Length: 215
Length: 234
Image 1: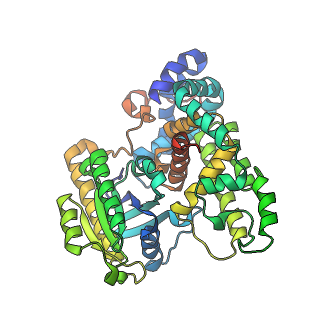
Image 2: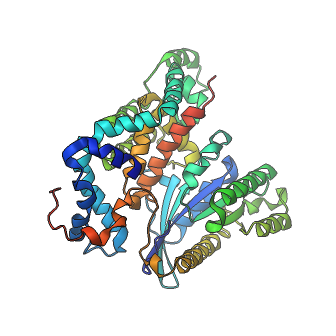
Image 3: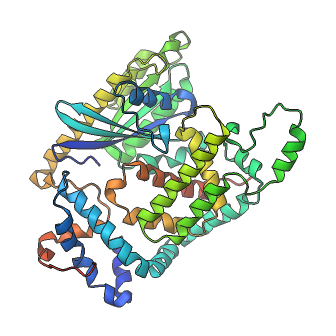
């Protein structure tokens, strides 16, 4: 999860959507366009990172692509686990892809509750003439599930910057609200609740043990 | 992990008392100097220092426990691996939905020679992505999560190299394209207890790597393990 710590936070964002809706193009546009620090990773467009500065706070985004094919649908939970945000992309000319997004929303809300910031993205608005998903319908749907809706065109680079900026701000708000909820004890941000951190149980107690036998 | 490690430890005799206490002194030495929030760094350093020492000794019983724990899943997985591996390369690539442009023969489909080539190719087994497959197989010979993650990373690099030499044009992986290819490699690697490997890495890897590239690589391996179990066999 997001590690707070005041200075910088890091967020994980998953990218969900059917095969040809252009989800990869959307992030590629975003990560290559503005800042020039294109990170060439082994996984290339499947894993992109981006550093941002929002109101003086440093934010690291890790964007995880997922396989959109229907046969891999069941793998979703493995990928979106621990995500702070999800970008759900559909193609405005393809009604079916919008239905898939609705399914994802239901699933994400069920599994992760309101901890995750959802963005519903209607891509390919450059093909507005062939639009099959009504703007109003998509927007009112997004509102009804507590998500934001965006119109983008990866081809024309429209709406993408806003989408990510907005998402980051919302994730920061969520993280801050989270921290406030946890009270002061949450200052020591715990990156995950997995069992490995047996260490955390008794930090003071054993700190005296000077020499460890691990050398 | 706690559930696993602690029941397991007593059998190991001498090593036991060290575990609860030894991470802590190490933290003290390693946490200063880190610019980030102290807690994640501590955990990182303690596990990266401790695991290479502990795991080689604990590995066999620990791994057996993991294997016993997930026995049913493992059997299901292994069944599918064996059955799917009977298929020759091209059939398997097609079955998994790997895009044709990533198939090994760069022979254009329209060539008149196709019939002949296709025949040779269609009977070939274990030829494509062989180096990636071999790389991934080394996962069973490593002990620590970080070494295993390195193996996974090398596997992805091998795949990328192979594809790059195949398609000279610029190409970029998206998960839609990459996942089926990686799935193919995982199947061909025939790793006996992949589920145990996955759980061991998951439980012991540095939490701070989870969101990084190693994180998504590992997640993709884990996803393959689940996918293979649920893959309907034709």
